Length: 539
Image (cartoon, rainbow, N blue to C red):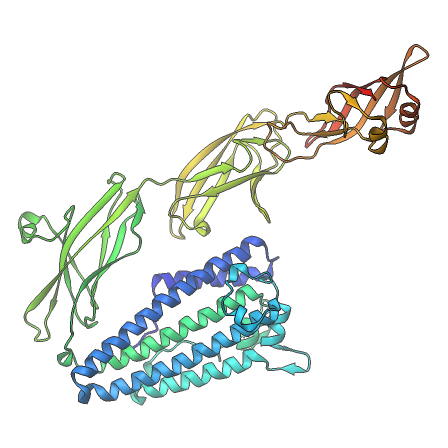
């Protein structure tokens, strides 16, 4: 009987979806939108995989029907009807999704069918989707309510396929009549709860999640029908042992885990697995001297877990066999398997996006990643001074102020929800930003045309070319020394612009007159600085 079971991957995606939905109460940052794209891509991948799983089950049903149409026929007809109901609802969900995308983006419907979520400009738009799906004042019950009606009709049709005696115990998803409340604890209906003021990125993700629930419901119903055929009636064309790993790459200390199953086996079976680590194919000699490891399974599946804490980083192989009882309940039939996995050292990559140094008083962009670890599981800390924070442009190291701190350390961790493990660390030097170079626009080799200087009368500054960083210093004052009546004469400016008496002098100055600029003060990230002086000749 169906139990609406979700795979670990589906549970993970569901949890991520709930967290992201909760974050909609906050400002929708680029990171949240990008996270919705990642979750949606995972859901779409799961949808493809699940569709293949459902298709495989229908193929098995067809094989059994071809072998014995009389016995399998009644179950087979209901399975085909379940397929029709599911295909119709999935097509309707897609039609609503594409219509909302097209209206929000202002693009043709055909374009909406092929554009990916990451390329949609209005991912954070909630006005148009809310109007189309929930409605507005005077126009309630829009597209979302029509979708709810379709879902309710689908559940009734699918439940009608299940014999009446089993319906009270048959769990089916796609519930729309639950008790829903908003953040203020006000009651909502299913449509408001899912689509009211929900951004387009979330709406697309919800639509694709609904499609997965349809596929899950179809699988549960069809699988229930398939189990209606007695074990003695199964005439499988082939049975294969399969190893389904959680991941082919594991870090030292983390177990390699996998499910070992027999395709098309009855869930009532209790298979036994024997395997040998380091082998590439099974040999019965492994059974002597306790060379093989034996595992007992349940419901047709054996869970394999190999400890890697004492294993060096490299590729590992294993081979084994899985035994199941034949339909007569006495004889055991063996099927063989072989697989491999890689053990890697925990590692993290931390890099400053500008230089391998952090500067005091400014935001220093930084990138943090770890091979094989989802970004959502990464955590980090900064030791020494300052802090790491997220911005719209990405991570930055900021608030570096202590002159006594010459370096800081970034530690990176993997937090999978049950364990927090350190992946690595990276040290960065901490320095003050170098002094800027001061210059006059249009000057070359210490000479500046008079008219060019008068047209652009500013002393400007910029970081030296060797500094791969972006920061705009500002000139806040300087002195200009000139010759008047044979004596040195000082003029003062309180900004980066030449004062009126400076401009008056330059207008009347002879060609070749030298101008001496001193006490040039600029405002930096922490304090004002005197960046020296320079001489320029007026031509």
